Image 1 (tube, helix red, strand yellow):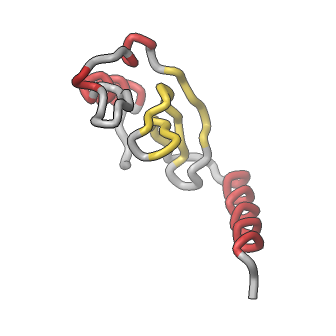
Image 2 (tube, rainbow, N blue to C red; image 1 turned 90 degrees about the horizontal axis):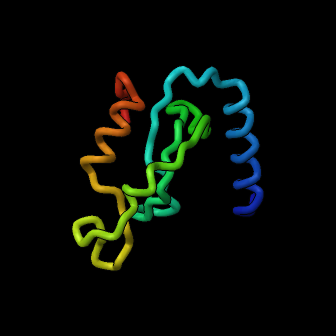
Length: 98
C-alpha cells in the first residue's frame, strides 16, 4: 500500500509534466486567494487545462480600503464586486468559462 506522501509526490510529478507540455490555449484571469474568502489583492492568469499560473498582477491599493460594505463578519477585507467584475471582464476579453 502506498502512503499519502508517495501519492502526493506522484501526482505532483504528473501535474508538473502536464504543465510542461500544455499549450495553455484556454486561460482566464482570476482572483488569487490563499483560502476561500481570503482575497490577497492579486489576480492571476491561469490555464484552465493544467491550472498553471501564467502571470499575476497586484490590484490598485485603493480597492483594498476599509469599508463596512467590503468587510465580512470576521473583519476580512475583500474587493467590492463591482470593481472586481469590471476589472476582470476587461482583462478577459472575451471572458472564458469559469
